[in-house]
Image (tube, rainbow, N blue to C red; front, side, top):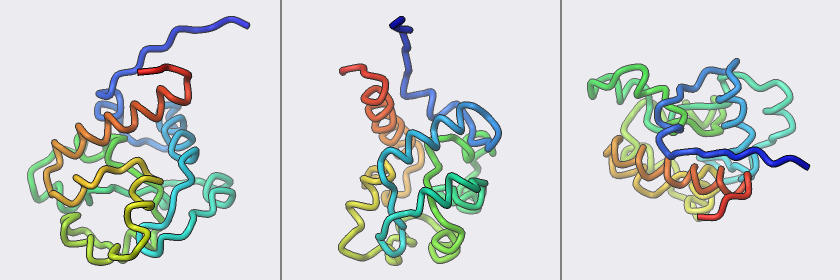
Length: 154
């Protein structure tokens, strides 16, 4: 078996944008699927069989809502960073609304919140409303998951 050297940096998750038809987005989606994602609102498991069979943009949403970030002066490239996306149903996204994460946290106030965040590789800093710090922390977590899947040890 031939091994191919792979080097991945945390910044990859920040500089690449979420675009359904791209290889990078598909790899990102399949990586997140390995974490057994859970509903942000109810805490139950996401039906990956259904989501991945018919996957489209309606099953993935911004962790920092686009409207919130646009109002804060962020560009669309910054907003659509892979590191800002997670498995999230349209219903969950509607419930959480286009507000700051600290405001939508109230809709996630259930005993499964920590597990939900872990299942989406999302740090608690999500709720600090500091997008740049969040991107840095989440991209580091995503890198750890990616390196684990490709067999790299940090």
